Image (cartoon, rainbow, N blue to C red):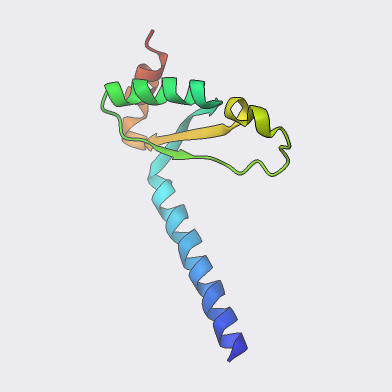
Length: 94
């Protein structure tokens, strides 16, 4: 019984990981921002142009600087591949 539960958990994790890989297949990372301020600048530009986006925040397990984490947090901004050009224009617009 114990092995059946472990097998089901492994299968569930594999399904979730496969689903994530498939959904990100049609998306491309267009910008990596460090810190809340940079992140919100980029996101506001994308929103103003109506570009849909996703954000991934990789875990920073090696960081011990908790007081400055708002300046060092990494945000990967993803857009659909067909929106990549519009997103790049929006981000680099002054």
